[in-house]
Image (cartoon, rainbow, N blue to C red; front, top):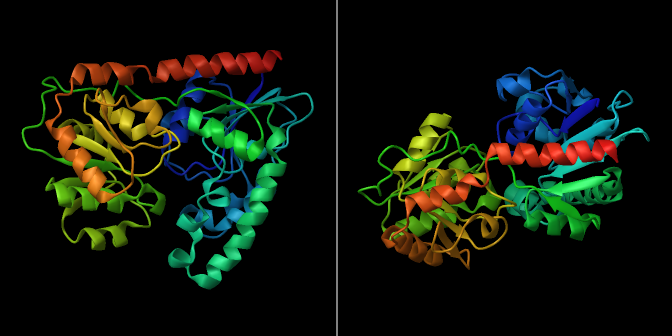
Length: 366
């Protein structure tokens, strides 16, 4: 099997890159294609691959402003040449699923989500309050054109594999395609409880997230203020200044942290919060792998990864008052750290690798 792996862009180790890392381990001879690769931003397992980039790689200031070149991405992804390959696996949240494959090759798409900003989250990314009225008007036309292209190229993949049943529903709605579900990998070997695994002595809450609008971090800030529980926020992003102003000193912003520091933060927190709607959500499972409960919005992937009253609590409405009540209840609830950990173990890297390898082998033989 001559395998090509395609990823939208390589600029950091998020959920999609962690899935890619497992596939690189399983298929060490695979070549990798991506629009933009910022060297050193991903793991050594990925960096060691033979990586092909698009013309976008050579545009001005691309390492910092690659998202600004979004209108060029459809042209860039279609210019890759896959004639040497018989199997192509794309890991797509933007345009990787729209590669042009030779007639003799099979294309399996591991879909993280149909692109949010082109379909149902335009206002969160490009609404007038975010970018100004004039820029929003321009981007609305650009995103409408991108959504049409995204829909029209949906049949370029022979098979879709979704990261959750929630995303499978979005694939059905926007692409009119069915999808198998394979949950993303969680490093349950690294993220595990410490030797004590006892409940933290002082109540505290944790958010681990990119600081972008749709994550609704302000809900967590307000909820913890109402509940009187200290909040620590790990992560960075374009919304950081606004959120720090909103918190007004009531939450600690730590920015990006190492994996070791992140694991320790999960272990020390009484509860990890997920106030936004996620397509899947790796963070809740990392927290659960460390034996800690999660309070999350009862929408999207959280409904598939959290067992109410056993590994956390689900909140029906995205309000600060509702989350504050859930935070108080979670801190007082007698959660079993071992049961929480056992639940998270079902989402391991080994399980993901085995399921994906079986699908890829099956696609190659079809």
